[in-house]
Length: 330
Image (tube, rainbow, N blue to C red; front, side):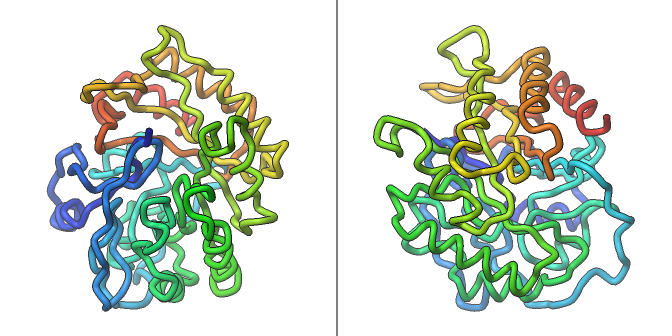
C-alpha cells in the first residue's frame, strides 16, 4: 500500500502567486507515490518539463535565470523539508526552510527569503517507470535552467522506486544523478527508498543495496519507516532503529540518510492502516530519529496537506504543529 506524497498542483501555484490562501486538501488523483497507489500520469507537453505536481505535469515557463534579488544567507545545520505545501508562509512560520516545488524559476522567486527548494523532477516511480513524467531530455533541460540558482537546494528524482517492478530504475536514477553532478554540482540529488519484504523476496535489504550511493550515485536517501498504525495502540519505534541499521548494513551511510517523519493518518479511508501519531508519540519518534541519525542534511515531514488516502495530516493538528515547530526552530 502506498501513501501519496508531496503534491503541489498548478492550482496551488496560481493561488500562491495571486496572494490567496489555498485549501489544505490536495486534489485527489494528483499523488506522488509514497506508501500508497499513485495515479496515472498524463503526458507532458512537448514544450518542456512539468511545473511540479504529484501528477506533476503542468507546463513550466521557459524563462531562464535566477531571482533578481538574492535570498538571505542560507541557514547552517539540518534543513527541514515538508511535502504538499499549499500555504508556504504558514509552514515557514513552523520553521520549515526547504520547500516542495517544480522547476519554474518564477515559482522559486516566491519562496520566503532564506529558504530553498527541493525541486521535484520525477517520476521514476513504479507505475510511471516506462514513461516517466519527466523524460531524460526534459530532466536535463530543467537542471540546465536551474544550474547555480541560489534558491535551489537539490532535486527530488524518485520516490520509492522498486527495481523488481522497474528493472531499469537504478540505471535511470544513476544517469540523472550523474547529470546533476556534472552540470550542477552545487545541488544535491535525492530519492526515497522504501525497502520491504514484498519487494525483497521475504527478507529486507535488497532495495537499500540496489540504491546505495555507490550504485545509484545519489547524494541523499530518504527512509520512511512510519511507526504508527491502527494494528496497535502504541507506535513501533523499533522500525526506525531497525531501518536505519539495515540501510547502513546495505551501503547507505548515516551521512546520506534523510529521516522521514510521520505526520499523517488514514482515518478518511474505508480501510485505514496508518494512524495519526499523538504529540507525545511524535516527540518519541523524533527522539529515535535523533539517536539514529543525529545530524542529517535535512529531515522530511510527510505531510502538510492531505493527499489521496493521507488524511488527516499536519494541517489538521495544531498539537503536532507545535511539536514540529519546536523541533525545527530548536
